[in-house]
Image (cartoon, rainbow, N blue to C red; front, side, top):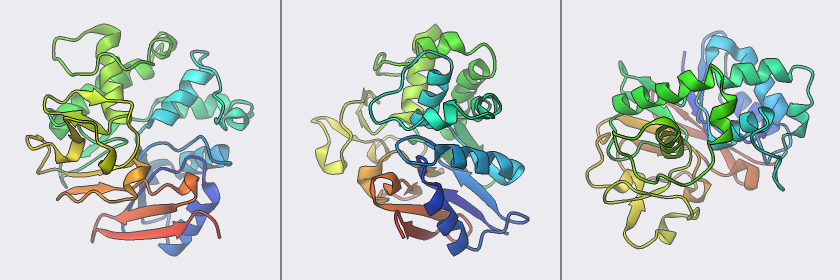
Length: 269
């Protein structure tokens, strides 16, 4: 019995099947965590969604920015972008069921008993894992209800700094941006949502979120995806980066929680 955390799939179903074969995944005993971005840019988003949904209680998912973009497109709040590969999902006969399942997935999975936390982009320095889990639930409650108005106003880079006094759509948007889009933050925790390259491209005055010297989650074990330019490297204790750029020709990676061992397969055979 083992638990494996898998980085961004982005529609890479065939590499996923090779990775599961490599780790000898047993759906009767093992558990899979998926660190968000199940869909988009890759060729088999529909197959990824169907497979993970079929795993039922053997899979734990957190939503990534591409998953939210798919939902926004489905609810008419966004249009397919140039590099999107979502049409097969949106035209599938089981699309309604898949979208209902997807919008009921969380933004944060916090296993307090074993001190593990999974989000797509990480944890901002001013939030503990418990705080992030609580704030994520505010967004999740909206996603599971009448969510179309939320998606209509989800996009945007402002506000770029958390404030407990924020309300309404501004509050929801910044929670989503921290949990699904974050890479660099400044000393106050302000987001830079423009720079997408690796650590060497950090803007002046900003650091990768996991290097912030006053990070409140320093004693929590964190797994995240989203940042392919890190190539799976976050040289900080208790932090594991798992997006290794499969959709860009890199690798698909899993981390076994019990012994922290990594397993990878190349994007192509």
